[in-house]
Length: 522
Image (tube, rainbow, N blue to C red):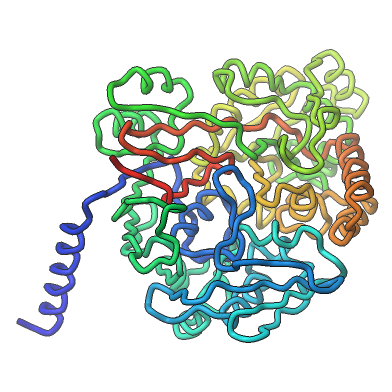
């Protein structure tokens, strides 16, 4: 037997032994896979959810979204522009290396790199300083009252592992870069990455050495096998047949059938995520339109007409089976800045919409392409199909291009889409997150060319304002400006549903992120 064959046999034997020891295997599915295992490359819900089983943050959120310690035991402002974090001792990475303050310094600086999708989220941090092996000081540009909130999806990496594997800088996802961190991981979390075949199968094994196994985290899962299934009917069939134990995103129309099936259950909750349309109003001429020498989206009357033509209540009723909340702003209840007044939908008025189109000089309408994901949000393609028919009523001829999210998101990040569907969660539970990514002139997800000097000014100001009343007033002012200018068209706040076997106990969370450390299989 050659050395290579012998090594392969040993690996196969070790895998077989691991499988034999894995008594509680949780098999689950959802429509779309994580985009990457690089923890700083993509700030996207399913990507964060998968990485969050393997990597850990300084500060996390419980299923009720309250802040809780993770790798930091405590945190407090120790100067006007400083926060001090006391780290958990005795923590090791999956390869056995010790976790300490140098890894925090490295990870935060890595997440500030140009290729990181977290750079806006932590842009206020100007210095990260280790004050001993288990103390870290974060220095911000002025006071930052929400810094702990901004760290709740920022994962800590092993500096030595990243350096050894040439991944000291995050993957450039928008440029389709391939690095070692895309399919490999070395975290401190409750589960270890055993194998990764994107869009096929990802296997995680229990980290018996994790610091957190206790009454607080009573999970008894030994192995997690995740297999994405893009077809909704196939996902439901896999659950009904017992092929999987948990479906993250069952079709809304099948919830009743699942609940009636023996041995299955469902749960729903309003998600902290808003679904909306974006229109590139900042370029001189659209790429996919029949209008030459002008951009219809640059005229606020056209954007307002589209808003009045898209019937969010009909989408709620017909497409979403009632499980959504028509929205008037791109942030959901529970996020600082959301108020009933700002969140009031504009309603539907085709007569007024047609009048606005005529005033803008587009009485005969125009054509444009709508880019839409078909495996990311609940009924995303169906929402886009509904919008196509609604916009046709005011003369806008929409060509729908529905594609997987792995191809859809780079079009937005590279700003090559005229008109697109996107969903936005707010992990910080603060409107600053929305402004900095979607509305600030330099925001990395501002693919519509929106720029308002006062909104930019407010975005900068609320990053350091500690007076809650003054801060809330500025946020409200910014939302008033945004609603008046209609840079985006809010559709609804999502309601999520989870479906699972009766024998699985797993708390649902409004961020749609399964916390398998809590999962108990009976």
